[in-house]
Length: 356
Ligand SMILES: Nc1ncnc2c1ncn2[C@@H]1O[C@H](COP(=O)(O)OP(=O)(O)OP(=O)(O)O)[C@@H](O)[C@H]1O
Image (cartoon, rainbow, N blue to C red; front, side):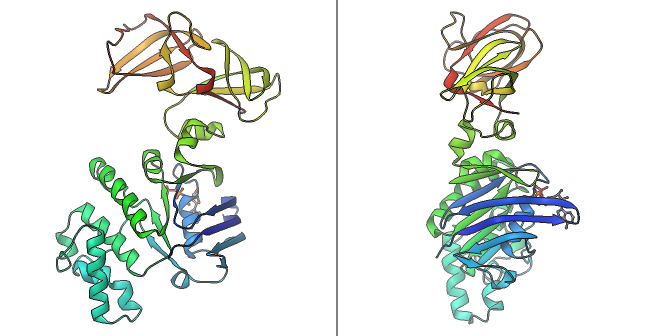
């Protein structure tokens, strides 16, 4: 059974330092939710607040509608998986998985049965008698997840559980973790500084910076419709062009920039004369010699790097503003010699204009 997690204006401070600032959010029952943000932004603190290792300085946390104030970690319907898995290396895999059940006084036969069912779930059937020390990194990861699921938590809290693994394995386990979450229906609250991980696995992502939750939305929305300049820059590659608002109406803003006038979508109204930044993704810029797009930039090529599926082009405007283009490797690629002129265009609908 899964439950929702309600963060009702939660704040936390360490002495004078505010680590989590007024976070208000309802994580839905059965959702895969990720908190994404740079190191030190308060993700772990938030997870520890939900787990009950620390109590919020202000605000309330409710799980399944129940106020968690004063309820210790082992009495909450949560289980947590840490970065360093803290498995017992010399114990068998089955005993590791059943450890939490043993602590709760569950009898041996039930423990064994439950461990075997979980070994099936994590695709390690019949491996219960192996020692943890005999398993690969990825297998240990799955055992740690099985151990956390053994006590049937309503909410599983995961603190960067893949960060110690190599890239290939991490990518493989992303898909597995996602499938496991779907199969069990348990609410997953995942924290990571890896945006690829958060985007690939989550139903919704909460992007954090300096203790503040900046945006909560589906991965596609966070990528295509960033709510703040921080989200626009932190999630994926982005080009930023600063300027002054000439006018803003009907969700569109015209910006005067050193690269000429540019138009983009603006999610929030901007006052004429105010400073703003236009963001456009590298894959949304394309060579546009005929000037067919809403926006046109006259650039000079600086670098060209062939990356297999795409070619990354580093370029700059007359004022030195750096821009990156990602051209899909779909046909003949332009030669783009260093220092050659390059006219680039993009659609207004593909650019977001935000107040700094
Ligand atoms: N026990 C503590 N005492 C004092 N300051 C702390 C304590 N725990 C965390 N902090 C501070 O609070 C801020 C948030 O820390 P937190 O561990 O939540 O960040 P994080 O986003 O999880 O970072 P990372 O990805 O590096 O783990 C940091 O600036 C950190 O130095």
